[in-house]
Length: 196
Ligand SMILES: [Mg+2]
Image (cartoon, protein in one colour):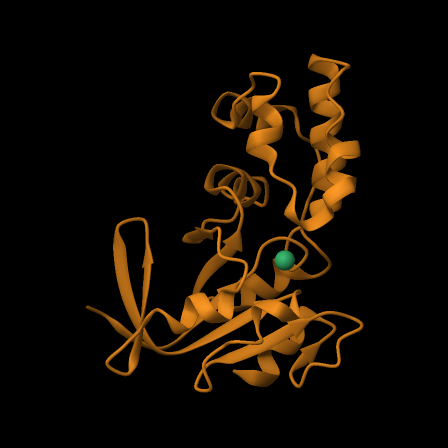
């Protein structure tokens, strides 16, 4: 098994991906199909933890069927800020997306970004704790798409501090948030490079 010195774990929603714009555009797309579907309204009520799959199932819709159609319909760019440029400059690094939410929805988001990165979709709302559970004999085992790679250190970049709170001490959490008081706060994704 390949052992990396470090792997960068990149959150998707509100870190590299404009989730609000996505909800708005997906809402337009669905409303054109059926005016009774009020995706944005439903999503606004719960914000971060909106369950797309359950919502769509109420209308007997499946993301499998909708994803390709939405990709063809879509004309927007969902990169947040300078995320595209920053990810482009991470070429020498092993980067994996670690994202809360349904795998198919998160995969659609990466497709909308035209971003070919491995994806780990989790239903664990505490990524620090999840990452701690990956530790085995001094390395972290990172599993995605049937592949396992190991790393001595993981660097998690996330807009939610609660995902960083329980990170193991030998990992690094960068809090991408304007209003953060976290020890490693970044307000611009390009600040990642100060830590590499
Ligand atoms: Mg996020």
